[in-house]
Length: 518
Image 1: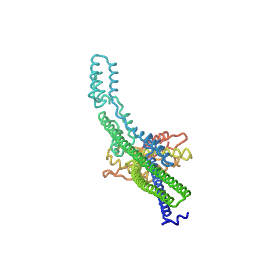
Image 2 (image 1 turned 90 degrees about the horizontal axis):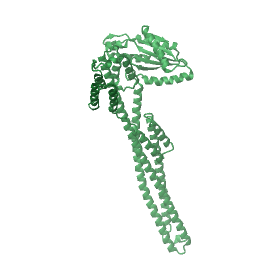
Image 3 (image 1 turned 45 degrees about the vertical axis):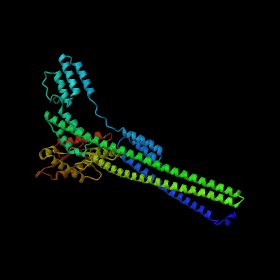
Image 4 (image 1 turned 30 degrees about the horizontal axis):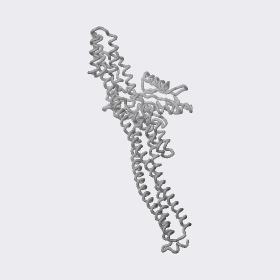
């Protein structure tokens, strides 16, 4: 190859080609860095979505399988098609979480009057019932009670009917007890605590007149309606949030697919460039081998090198544009991930607060009945496995209703707070104390037999008896009674609780301010 020495600038083409190869290597290094950055951000996206699915698991049983499937999809990175299919299923499940609209009662009214028309066939009754049916279907009655009274006036015109006729046939005590159990059994939002406490005390009051009972029923039903509306509102907010998250996940999926497509296109462009340069060099080598004259060979070499240089330049420009586009997509992706992490943290905080409120009594700060049920399940499992003793104590404040009636509900609340504090401060760290409802408290005592529980209970009872309390400047004596039982073979939570409750009843019957074992 002596012709290199004869050229005016013999190493110029060689240097130029080597420079182009250096630029290509730098471009590849830059691409690798960009690809590594993309992988890091993809990993961050996967972790964020997994955390979000974990945070929202348990909010709705219909969504949990989809959340689990999304987590499984992301364990080995993002598979766009599979993730997209799962997101579509998740979106469909979210769309199905709707509240059924109130059903029209006109069909039920029609069936009621069809039955009445078959039973009461005198001309007067038939005519009156048809008129009443038309009124019920068009004008509507404000309450079912009004409709029933109107029907009674038609079928028994000679009977003295008043607004209390239905109430007079109801056992007020049974209805009050059932309503009280309902209020004790449902989760009441903290904003309704005071109203619920008032309703419970009214329902617990003996010897209610019919008029007073109707007022109590009205207040109780209005409270239950408010609680239902509040829960529906919270559910709707949750549905909106899930829809929002679904939209964001879909947007992230599009961004990831775009970035993935850009990376694939960049790799394909680099392969095409490598192939083109290889072809050009092969042709250049072949031409050099077959060349017989210098000048044509120089022209051919210059032409091939110019073509190679142009292709490398075009590829470099396309790479720069593609990298800029990919970087923008990744920046947008990072911003979206940060927004989702922020929303996820906010959701976790809200869920933590909601969980605390669901398991805590808002007045005393003690665990509530739901928390007691959870802890009892754990302690029963431990008791069955290790056969270590487990005792239950049910506490009840003596003459609590008299305190409320004499000094007001605020004084009653202060007594509850005082009892809660004394029980907490003077019990052992392993004991679990909860406010079961009203003026009742429960204690679970692991690794404690009934006799040891009795010793502890009497110490607590005496401590509370010595505690002073003033209401409106008057010193009020506070005492507390309890029933104790130890779990025995074959016991369930219900049988043991029933036994402890009977022991408490026995303590009350024997004069209060004492503890009994059964």
